[in-house]
Image 1: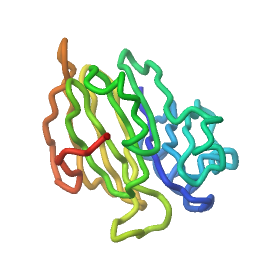
Image 2 (image 1 turned 45 degrees about the vertical axis):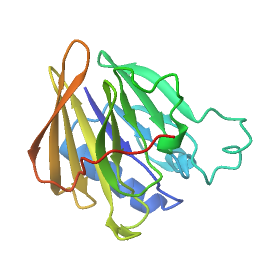
Image 3 (image 1 turned 30 degrees about the vertical axis):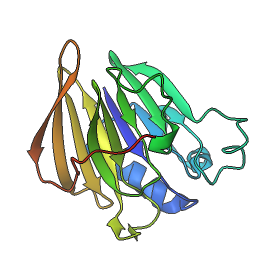
Length: 187
């Protein structure tokens, strides 16, 4: 099963649509996970699969508490949690064996968090924003989880393999290194 993971479209619907079309040429996408900041943009995108989304800091109800800042769900046998900011990860989930996907910072990253992993796809606001090139992730869930990071043209930038062990995930870099490996603060 494949998921397209995107963040921070910021109202740039035409760019978002081009990213979705590019991703669909690369892989058979069953789900799209939008990690906030203008998640309503997905309402204008032509996609037949399942869309999961969380609000970002630009959403009116983000600070009021009217909307949940995280969404947890199973996907292909894995526990997934999506949030906009790494600061939105509920404390009771930190340290669990699960995959956390977050946006907000506009750069891609993979970092360990207890027995889980924190993963950011980067942004799709514009081709270039805050010093970072636009990027998205396609997660291919099979025996292992293959994360592939692409630029907005669909060129593969980096790839990582996540081995699913009984009590934790083991991360190995397959090629490229634009995906960072540093720690991300969640408090």
